[in-house]
Image (cartoon, rainbow, N blue to C red):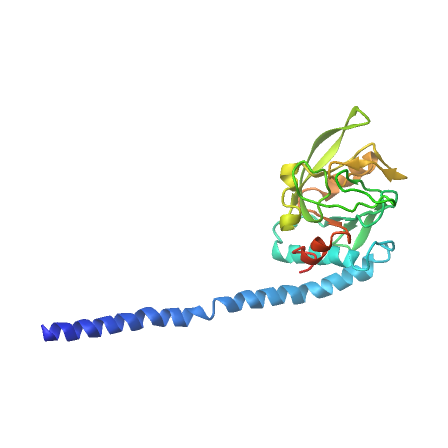
Length: 253
């Protein structure tokens, strides 16, 4: 009996030592690669942002905030570094909603060439995004049925035959589905039916209001939407939402 107890104690001690050693050996290295990869992505992104700013800022001279273009490009390159498989198209649609509905505020860039494709041009905001006296939207949201513009970064999906109503009349255009990737700020875009489309209430002199869609002129939509579709990115900016400005996961990465 005594021999059995002694042997049992030795076996238990050995098992405790065997069970704890691997945890100690493998606990530390688990976090290190993540930190290294994140740091590498941030380091790699910075020169890309600066290069793009140097080449595109000459075309984006009227902005509502000094960091409008920078935040757009930080979001673009940050998301592309994290999800390269989703960014299959170099076209990037950027809208500065800190500007009024009569001010051209939309751009499309070719990010491979770092060139302006088209813009600036008039873009509609959502009717739920209350406007001030100057026609600048002041309210943004992600709620179903709100009619508000959602800020942040979106990945473009497929195009489709869009139809809508304007002035009590039915019209048709091309539509482009959007997948919001800025978390709480726009992740309901697909379910809400927030899309890029052409609309007769958007003209060269100003725009009516959409149901939250960054709508553009009809002819422009037919020209640009096929280029932006299927793996391009869209970034909707405004300095008038302090929470979004501080907390968008891509614009502040």
